[in-house]
Length: 393
Ligand code: IFM
Image (cartoon, rainbow, N blue to C red; front, side, top):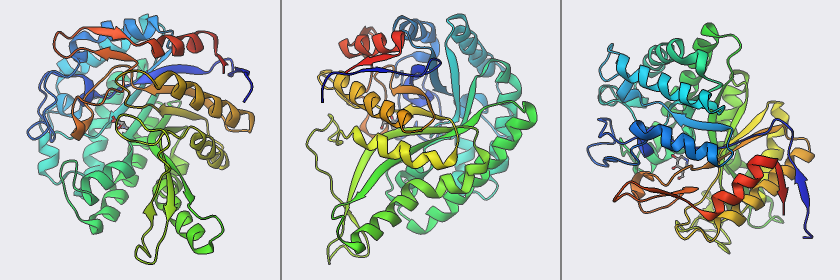
């Protein structure tokens, strides 16, 4: 394609995302910590001013981070004032730097007491979550620009209850409907609770959406299996919660080509082209974000890309990755998708769950030995776009 100058809307938000367990450190005790301890992680809990300075230096005007339920409510009925005051300080530090805040109330880790009660399988989960939400929103709302109740409900359900990879490590497909139903109930209840406290609050969920397409477009069977895949993977949660979202938070990483063979039917095999991949072997498919965004136009809601990124230790692919995704986001905007912001995953290298500290997702490199940080060259390129709102591609 010839070189183009693409201008993003005037008030477009530019930034990056992190989550508490992946960056904070401080040996927090939760359902992950015994088997998969993050230890000191990036020491972000104590060193947040340094990371916010880096975000500012990189011209970012929005920062997405999450609260640690385990720190804020270490025991049932017990809220820790020190922890909540700490998060107030963080929010004030963002305000001082003129960086908007997007706060995820729950990003994948549970306090031990909640997981001992069965976590997301507990039929009263939404009530427990509402108590926690009420507390944090009453304490922090005056400083928060956007709330997100939860992160990637469908991915969590699949990794924790179907594939058995994340705590509580269950392999039971039959538990999935119960967990998804609890996510829907929990989100709706939290949404209402936030709006009872502040009727003008902006509330969403970070949803990980994939662009799923049939491997063989000519086959009716393949097309209908791909449609079913898309329904469960991308639409189900959205459809069930669409009246309880003020904006759509979209995490985009994946493109799936759905292939069926006589041996795989009725289940589809996911087959990718894998032409270009990240360090985690995830296919890089920027065009998919365009299709994902186009499919969201029907909801008539503002859209924020709340995650998009890749593991790329040598920083050889990140600049191109960002620019190509932005190009397709721009195209989707031109085509009517109301996209209002982009948050790269991630500001800094961090604890990539079961993959530990190997994968490097950061715009900023983290040296875990001496805890020093180094801005990667791609981050400087992204910073130019953040500053001007213009992509020269
Ligand atoms: O690191 C995760 C994040 O916690 C949720 N979304 C995907 C990221 C990359 O795997």
